[in-house]
Amino acid sequence: MSIENLPSEVKRRRTFAIIAHPDAGKTTLTEKLLLYGGAIQLAGMVKAKKDRKTATSDWMAMEKERGISISSAALQFEYKDHVLNLLDTPGHEDFSEDTYRTLMAADTGVMVLDAGKGVEPQTIKLFKVCRDREIPILTFINKMDRPTKDLFALLDEIEKVLGIAAIPLVWPLGTGPDFKGVYSLIDKKLYLFDKSPGGSKKASFQMTGVMDQTLDDNYDPDLVKKFRDDIELIEGGLGNFDKTDFLKGKCSPVFFGSAVNNFGIEIFLEHFLGLAPAPDHIPLSSGKFLDPVGSPFSAFVFKVQANMNKMHRDRIAFIRITSGVFERGIQAIHNRLDKPVKLASSFAFFGQDRNTVDIAYPGDIIGVINPGTFQIGDILSTGKAPDLRPLPVFAPEIFATLSCTDTLSLKGFKKGLEQLAEEGILHLFSSKSIGSGNPIVGAMGRLQFEVFQRRLLDEYKVETNLNALPYGISRWIRQEDISKLPSSANLVVDKNQNSALLFESEWDMNYFSKNYPEILLKEHPNLVV
Ligand code: G4P
Image (cartoon, rainbow, N blue to C red; front, side, top):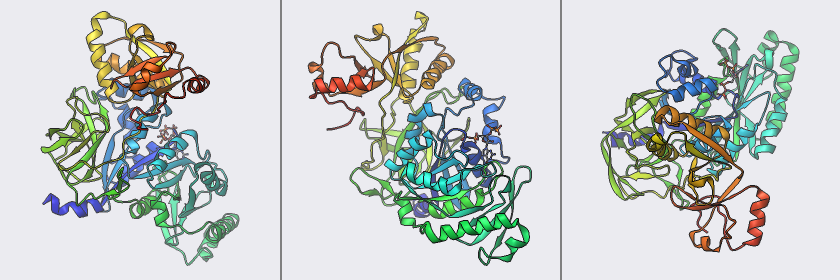
């Protein structure tokens, strides 16, 4: 039954992630998409969840205090007979590594820009990951109800800074307080908005063309003139949108709207369904693509999380299904360990709520209980494992030693370190020469340390001291090069027994490379040269 449904289930799925610089409107857009999908009843719920009195973990309390989203969950909702899987990518810059990995599970990226700010630093970083993965990206220019940059300059900025052709598929009628609606350049319809509380679309009307008299009858002549001039420019010069180019990540269709007012979301969603690819295009290391219908069940772990909920003190591995049908209880092969594994408990999460999932298809994201055997990047399959491209690992840039204040808590300290490092939020190292035997932690940003310490305290009851180390760069090295190292080298060993060197600055690293050219410095522990 489920196998028969496989082709149609694949076809109707869209798995995507929203990428944005903090504050551009990612949460608000998510909320509005969920509202259309009927996954939530009232706008405001995604945020409200953070503030719920019943918040069951202190880690959520921290999200509330800091106003940031630390966890990333996948939400599933239906819209017009499509199943949408939305991966929530934490927006804070310090959580980049986790965010980057989450993007590995997405087939499409939705880039949200603040119309007043344009392309911001975090947008660039996240965009690059999408580009490396060659996933198509749609652009949603948000906050059109506020003063905006010049829109042509904004399109130019996208092209110049990100190196992708930005092609509008809709164009706004007015901006800021004059933002009245968006005109679809595809179906030649004008979608008008009403600034009622909560925000909604007012009406849409078919125009005979941009010269339609209705525009003159209803709007300020200057507004209409500017609109007509803009459309003429676009239709004359900006080039035609080519779906093949979009699917190859060469151009990005651009939409305009205001998430908080619910302007332009529905038209975006409609186009999204037609443009975003179904999960049938997973690139393999061989350069070929995985066939999700013709291949047996396969999935990969892209996120591991301990203590999702205090009620269920278990560790969850989030898997993205890449081919075949998942049925609860399925017997798969854990490829790294070359061992059979029965996936008896499988869940979907909405914030802190979890529901059992009995069946899932390619593109879907489910959480399975992790008895400590799943690591990020592991592949599970019932047949031969597909040669999926490896997930990226980033060399940490800040380091500290961590010690526990109470020797009686050592056991919890060790367990907490292991379990939390398993989630990949930070790197764990040990060293004979640095840190007097204390574990060394490495991260991309300071907030990761704070979260780590806070979680050790909340979830493992361990108070810790953090002492910053003066290093700013790390590089992994080959085992055979260890004997060639000078005694002054800052050698550390990661949790998988790979050796790495720490440097204070790029200058130090370059100086080292000049003196020891035979020692290869690798940004990724598994880099094969
Ligand atoms: P993020 O997840 O990308 O960090 O952004 P988020 O959605 O939380 O939005 C950041 C702020 O921008 C919020 O205001 C939100 O209401 C506002 N915002 C989102 N979309 C629009 C829009 O289209 N127009 C305008 N004018 N504002 C928008 P806040 O004051 O920080 O939070 P809140 O109290 O409104 O929730």
